[in-house]
Structure formats: C-alpha cells, structure tokens
Image 1 (cartoon, rainbow, N blue to C red):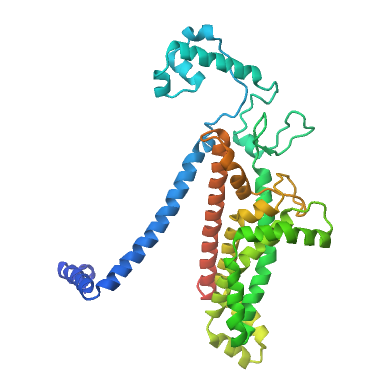
Image 2: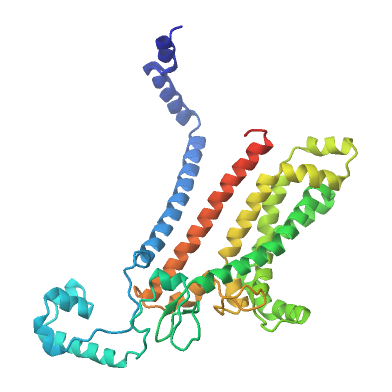
Length: 399
C-alpha cells in the first residue's frame, strides 16, 4: 500500500464520524443515568479547577499593587498651602487630596480648602524620622535588612502597626519553614512506620481497628489541637527540654505533626497496599522475613505514592493556621533556633487581616503573603508531580 493510501485509510471518514456520533446518541438513550452521572462528575471536576483559579485570581488581584510597586507606605506628607490651590492643575490637586474622579467632581472650592487644611494637620502630626519618607512596600525593604532609626545594625523586621510601617517578610518565611520542618520530621517517620506495620506486618484483626483509629485523627478540628498544644503540650515539652520560651516553633511543629499524621499515613498505606502481593510472597519464598520484604521490596515499589503522601503532608502543614496561631508564640524573630517563638505567614494573615483598612498597603501586603503561600504550594506540588513520574519510570524500567 502506498503512503497516500495509508494516510487515506488512517483518516476517519464521514461515515465513521456519523457512526461514532450515532453510538454516542444511542448511549444517551440506552444509559441516560450513566451518561448524566459521567457529565456531572466532569462538571464537578471542572468547577473545582475553575474555583481554584478564581481564588488565585482574586488574591493575586488584591496583591498586584505590591508586586508592581504601585503602593506607597511612607508617612511623610508633602505639604501644599491652601493659598497655593489655585496654582495647581485639576489632576495635581486630585492626586494630592487622594480623591477619585466622582469625589473630586462633587466638591466645591470651600470643601477642597478644608481638605487642604486637614492635610496640613496630618503633616504636623507626622513623625520626624529619617525613615518617614521610606516606601517600605518596595521589594528591597521586603527582603533585605535595613537599619531603622533606633537600631544598631540592619534588621529584618515585620512591624506593620507602628509609626513607620515595616513589612520585611523574611521573619515570616523563616517561622513558616521552622514549624513545617519540625512537623515533617515528627510526622513522616511516625506515619510511614505505622503505614508499613498496618499494611504489611499487622494481622487482619489488628488492622481492622488500628487503621480507622489513626485516620480518625483527621476529624479532630485544628483549633482543638491548638488548644491542646497551648495548654498541655507546651508545658510538658518545656519541662522535658528546659527551654525558655514556652510557645515556640518546636511546640507548633509537633502539634502540626499530629495534624498531618493521618494524611501521610492514609496515602502511604494505600500506596503500600497497592503493591502486588506476589512481590512479598516471592521475597518470603527466598527466605526474607516480613520486615525485610516490607522494607527492601514493598517500600521501594511504593515510593512514588509515599513521596506523594509526604508532599501532601507538607502542603497541609505549611497552610495550617489555627495551630500555629495558638502555639508558635507569634513573635517575628529572625532565628533558626527551634525553641524560640516564631510567626508564620498563615498566622499573620489570620491575626491581622480583620484589623486592616480595605485597600491600604497593610491590606495589600497580607494578600501578597497569601499569593506567595499559594505559589509555594503550587510549585511544590508541581515539582513533586514531576519527581513522582520520574520515579514511576525508573521502577518500570524506562528512562
């Protein structure tokens, strides 16, 4: 057969298309409930993806002025005397008084003069500080240390409620990473050990009650775990380790670990259980013990699923709010010491968003933190997905 004939054969003809559409229509008539269920599941999945996209779009839109450098948090006020109002153009006067087009159009000259006098009073009350003219929403002040008035050296400071608004996000990033790191170090070994025992070593009778008991931890509200960490765990751990700060990143991380244990355990146990039993039976037939078969055969075979469990646990830990809000101490300190108080991004958003003015720089900054948190979670999940696919190819013998 020639190339032309082969190409002609592989292309669907009009009759084939008609037959396919006729089959779809017959499927709707013969199995209408199944067809409706299939379309309903598709719409639910599509709506979930769309909802995530819309949430990110809303948060990113509110934070856009920060990313583009359009916000100004300086408290130094440019002074223009009321008698100079006639020399200003309409656009200059409107920008100076911070009025919209509709607001400016509805005001007479007397009202504008009064607003000019109010500006003078605000300028008189502005702090006399060399940092008063600093726009602290610029990226160099968000990421780099700055020697503020009254400090001996450059510092990373998050202090939005002060005469000079300070928005350095490094203390919040370090606090989030410390609490998440402790949570993973506590929860991942415990969860994987429990998953290996339940899926490979436990008797069916023990597995029947142990697996639901661990998964029931997911039903405990995070605020309850936060209260437990605040009232009980913080005191016990302080007596055991003897550190000074009762509430710190270590306490918050251990409490976070309790929250992510059921997530990591459930997914890892499913991945281990899905490994064919023939792998274990072959290992036992060659003289391996159950533990050797589970550790050297089953766990490597289930590595992609186990890695996915760890990544989901990371996303759950870094996005948790109530536990870190109640148990971390909420002090924005630049220190990698796990036994010092910390302040996370999520706790900052939860504690401060209700007290901000809509549209001001503090409000925009909190939405910027939310956007960064969303981006970190998205990138970590994307990287994990690529690594999981690579591990699957290696296990299947493909390059």
